Each structure stands twice: as C-alpha cells, then as structure tokens.
Length: 142
Length: 48
Image: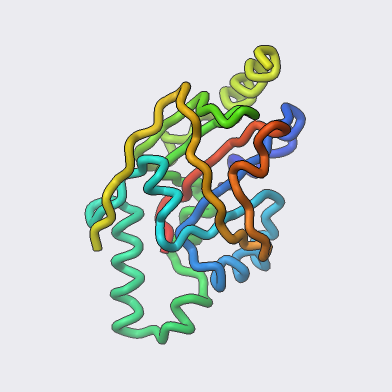
C-alpha cells in the first residue's frame, strides 16, 4: 500500500482518512504494525464480513478466498496455529508492498459511496492524482 | 471454503457500516468518520 501511503498527506489535506481492510487476524496484524508503522487504520477482517458486505468476490477461485484456503493448508502442514496467527505471510507482505487490492471505494462524509471499483490487481487502484481530484470535487459539492 | 458474495456496491449507495479491530489495537467503525471525514477505503489483496 505504498501508493496510498505516499498520497496520505495530500488526502488528509482534503479532509479524508485512508482505511485499509485486510483479512489478517489481529494477532498478526499487531506484528505488521510493528514492521510497517501504519499511520492510518489497518483493520483486521479475518471472517471477511466487511469484504462480503461490500460485494467483493470471495470464493475458492478469488485471490482473497484462495489466501484463506492456503492459510488453512499451511496450518495443517507445517505451522502451528500460534505461528500461523503470529508471523507475516509472504502473500500479505507482497500485497503490502505492491498495493494490490480486491476492492477500492471513496465514501463521502455522509456515508455515500462516490467511487467503487471491485476486482483485483494494482490496476484496480486509481492513481493518487485522480483520487485527490475526486476528493477535491467532494469538497466543492459539500 | 466458500463464502457468498454480497450485493455489489455502486456509487450513490450508502456504504454499509462495519466495526473491526485495527492493527493499532483499537476498534474502528466506518461510521466513526461520518460527518467529518471522507474515507478512502481499500480492501487489501492476498490476505490471510
């Protein structure tokens, strides 16, 4: 999520907060906090409840669902449950670095969705200039 | 593992609220920002 991190000061200048949702269990999320020192909220949604309510494609074939499956697979093969919930996972670290997302939304102060894109990959994320432009337009329209 | 997909959200719709634990150790709800902050919301890929 380096792209959002880079844009964060400018987004804040437009009265916006960045919120990132991951399926990381809170125990491991605390480790990520130590490593990456997130400035904005990184939320832990291991049951995928928020992802589901936002209409993200979650099943065996999706990247997100596949990651959950692979986590269960790893726990049965080589890692104890404590390890699984404590140590960073390679796919998570890759996502944190590359900024790959399954869903991206801009929500205004009234809680209305103003931009929605669901899918996968780095191309899902608009560039920071476009995000800033949208936030600027929201300021003008109140 | 099979989790059903919710209805796809479109611009103009009200965002559903959620409350989740953060990596900073506090719970955060989407509605916490309502009335004073726009929200740039990203669901991170490849999560376990």
